[in-house]
Image (cartoon, rainbow, N blue to C red; front, side, top):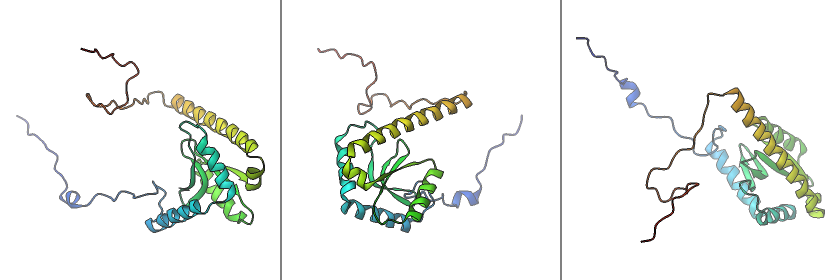
Length: 188
């Protein structure tokens, strides 16, 4: 008869604590103090926004953009962008009078390095002809959707063995999303 081997836990590993989960920032390696300051600054900007921000936010609130929603003064990494669409990886930056152009270029470069496209819009354009701005934004959104789809197709072609299936809800879960072909209920 052969001797049975078992795995033993390393006693040092068992007493060591697991690494702390990141509170916010989702991998941007930003200190909690800096993130809290950024969120507070974004809150203040939302409270005291310019006329161009208010006009564009009003248009976004009234529009049905489906899953592509824009959040005002969103914290993305260590930057605050005027509007952010997370699903598209698209940030809108409104150019106001008297802003620091060097700082803006550095922020845009850091966002684009992680795959977030930045669209710059002049505040005067929003206030004078918002319909033209929205038409331009619609085209940029369509282009971005196509870029994302093309990247997904290229990824799928490069990794044919990789599959993804949505997790199925546990049986009897009434709060789960309904299936495509629900069975009709009999009334007795």
